[in-house]
Length: 142
Ligand code: RB5
Image (cartoon, rainbow, N blue to C red; front, side, top):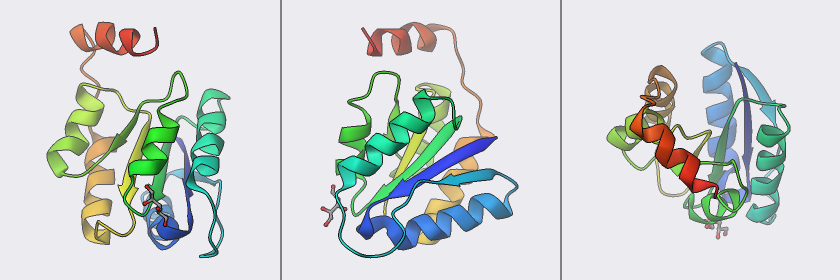
């Protein structure tokens, strides 16, 4: 599975960590930047992610900004993107089971690496339940 990853400066260190974790777990990772800690604007990286997912360059994505909030807001303005901020292990599971999220989001300044790695693992190990949840997902993009 190809997974795209992107962050702003506040998420850069966590992005590098998540990228290595994904690669070590056997995923093919497409890094969309940013490439260092210089200040950048998180909406641009949410846009790059949406372009990669909607354009078929990756099947899923990981986004990181300081809190995970701004980059989630922007990503979710693109039709077809379902970005979920994984603030707990339970949410990591539900984001796949019920929401079939195609982008998962973390806060580089608000989460620790151990939690992020565990939530990535939980999310990708979980299956979407479909059924009634598919109908609701279809309603998201009306
Ligand atoms: C950048 O300073 C910070 O505002 C950004 O990374 C993010 O937390 C916004 O939601």
